[in-house]
Image (cartoon, rainbow over all chains, first blue to last red; front, side, top):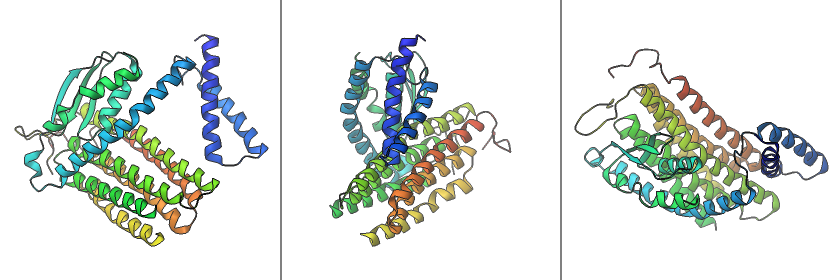
Length: 166
Length: 110
Length: 94
């Protein structure tokens, strides 16, 4: 990895770690802050060639902004699916209503981080669990009934693709 | 304010109950994971939101810090819960465990 | 409100007995790991509620964070450990 990339990755991860240090310690005197700066610098230098593989400061900011736009929609979708699974679990004739099966499809997302976000979103939505994902975007999803499986890939894939600009 | 947080905690406990019952009732461990991982995550999110709102009722700097820490736990669980679920599913797939389906009564029905 | 939190903590610890059944009886190793995971995510909430009851939330929040971390690492390590082997007894036809 080039030294320039490593430096910008170091700066970004240093400030993220320092933010977490300040929040978790909750003390603002000189001793604790300098201790935090030293340890954050050491850790950030150690992980700087792994933590952020392709550092572009503006790209990362835009990515996070898009992700925060995506997050409330995801929470709402999770809540809806939660009530569905809840009704399924608590219903007396559960064994007739569930229909576990594995469905396979190919996603059109090519970015690695996008694929991971998509798979995590599928797993976070109740009723569907990502069993396997390949580097080319082939997903195997275990769904608990037909209604949960019907929503895939659908709108979630379109929104995740929009985050990563495809 | 107190009423909202009490309501959120009650809904969170209801989700926890649903997750626990799902662990008992569903037929095999692939389908049990739907209840175990996800309903528990949602229950944790709602209960933590209620507790954070209750912390913020007497407003001071230390309490704001505590509320931020509570929401950081929620963010952490939201990132790690799919990873843990996928680890268990992957262990099941590699042990060649067939999932339970309706027509073919595979799996381990207990 | 503190009494309400005390009672919800008691209800939560009653709910923790249900996944305990699955992790004791559960037919396969993965069922047990899953039950332990469910108990751990309930314990994270329970620790913060205990913090409210004792009036020391700022201390118990760190314990809860460390417990959530430990729960995740434990589940990950256990499920990696049982990757290939099928448990102490061969559970081929169960």
